[in-house]
Length: 277
Image 1 (cartoon, rainbow, N blue to C red):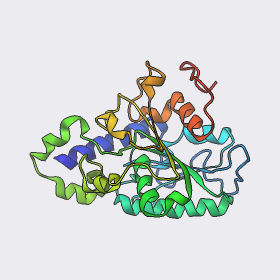
Image 2: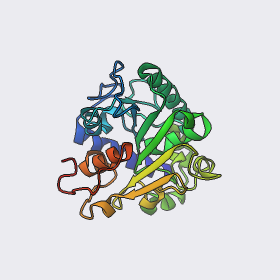
Image 3: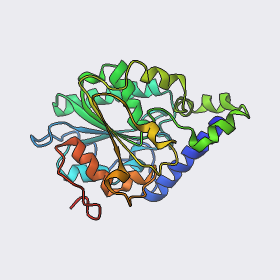
């Protein structure tokens, strides 16, 4: 039941995302992203790589942020990972292996653009998985900033349902089908190893953007990181009447503004009624 609860919640999240953004299979082109002829401009010298979460795809996850960044003058790239090529639901495989896929994609982007480093923006697992790349696969030399939107940095209890599921003991079979699900549970060995020895990464700035209404990463504060190179932002401290939940962050113009401020110099106070104006 423990993993089944996780699986059901994340499938629901993916289906809701599809309903919001339209059907999209893995590998579907994403507006604003993956122009391999894009040359970074002086104003935005680092390409931005977008990393989706569990049971999602790049096309489902980034229909708002990708074109917004492209309009603002960034070279934008995105990938699907963590499943067989073309699979409808991505991001289910072993997270360390997925980090290896990200490493190869970063190298491809750097080669194509001639940039020295990239910035990464990731949602949910996509905000946490790059930390494995930074810490264990040499990514710290190639990434200037990681911005995580509701990342699963310390795992989730799914509002207490995981504890209830533990009593029914069906973890193994479903975890075998979705290794990333088990690895994102609070207290998992994968997360213990990832966070051991400090949560910041020398030379890489990390920002976490979370919402108190997150129903997938619970408690929401488990997204936050500790360390000198870390900045934690709660959306409701910026705009108290913003009720975006886990998936809502992906379409929230306030979050788009916060991401752009993190990628560049902040532009001052956010107008919650017209954040992109």
